[in-house]
Length: 616
Image 1 (tube, rainbow, N blue to C red):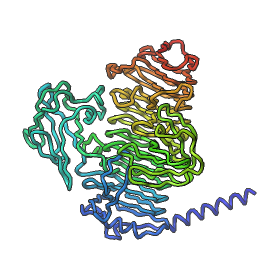
Image 2 (spheres, rainbow, N blue to C red):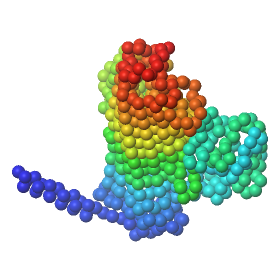
Image 3 (cartoon, helix red, strand yellow):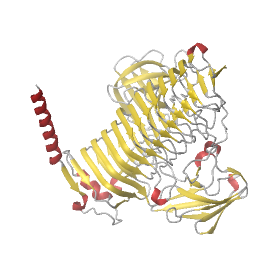
Image 4 (cartoon, rainbow, N blue to C red):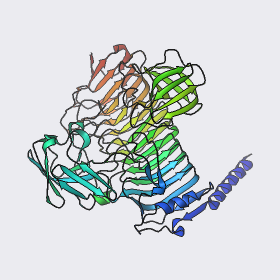
């Protein structure tokens, strides 16, 4: 039997080697696509891809610079979640209904011009993209260095080559390629400030890094690249820090993976985008290794992506994210969720008319035959039954009809939203670094099995947000099995105010009336992590059944002055089966206390009498 086993193994290896040897390789230079010419290769590379069959092939780019300009032959309409629907989208590399393609750029720089989507994978399978840097010569947001700042003026220096602009009395006009955009000072977190260590200063974020009478600021150019803003300021950025001047809309993803499966991305640096970084929408099995959303260090930049980094909506199968780096983003490094849709009306016993509730989630192919759908009562967000889809009928970009195989539960009305329970991936996030970004760290909303392990967080807002919302953003769904283990939460975490950031780990579903007997989330384990907060809140949890916080180490940082309105280390609201045990607290940790709201003290098990318990 052993001899047979070895023979079979040898045969398998020989077959695999033969497959590799017979795999076709295409060098783009053989097709007239050459590096370092600065001419657009958009048409050439797409014609090459269009002519491929489905036999395995590797497309190789000799290392160098390749430029992509919008080409009207590759304009297509797409409805991209969490993105403004400015259609048609301008596509650079399009892989449409293809299989078994590897693109190896061998460390090349792909340089894009204007509002454009670098990669689009549409209904494709077994696609591997690796060894590429994505960037713009002229980014679609600008950066400035603060030279002087006081209550009456701010003087900033702007690189005129990377960020060409004109100054007028009411603001600045940035323009390059075929676009232009207006900018002026604004309140809140539309502006981002970074120090020279690429850390967002504490108590900025939603509190703003520039405050005062921003409507009456006068803008002057003292010399080219030096902009003087004169006004009445109550808060200004620190001299020597960098101010991000956000002036464009999120309209194209860096990569758009659309209704595709078995996708692998490896060794990719996304230095800039004009929207979400890498958007995976209704995909199955996506693997990302060494995929970095970072500002280009060779160009002294502080901003990377325009919004979220890795964004997954409505996916299935396995999502694997390993050894990835996210810094300088306008929003969250990782966001994984589905999309609730509200019921507009009941048509009959088996049919519902539904609408897309949010203006950045229209036109989605929300379900297909055989999908399981949950009926979610908006007020409590309890799921009151499920149904199997028979057909999905598009009415227009704002609405559709769902026909179910069986009778819809009684009482379903416009008080309900629907969740696609089949679009719920398992997720593994390991060995990643999360630097300082405008908002939070990882947003995770999936009922699949989730592991977040061996990551380092330096987020400006909450490091991890577990949400769920059937009333505003409509991002689903409830988690059922998540482990957060052996991570390091460093001092910058939750140092500024952003939406839903109630603690370093914030479990915050937006439930109008939380039901303590039927919590929304369940089975959340936070084990073996280290926390180094300057402030009080470490863990906030609302509507969870089965919450374990054990064997963690909490020490105090003195990097920032405490500012948060919540003065509790732990706050639990309408939760069940909460276990706080085996944790180590440094003597000077703030709070060392627990606030219970809307729940019985019998639902809390605690193995540390040094923690004060307050019941509200």
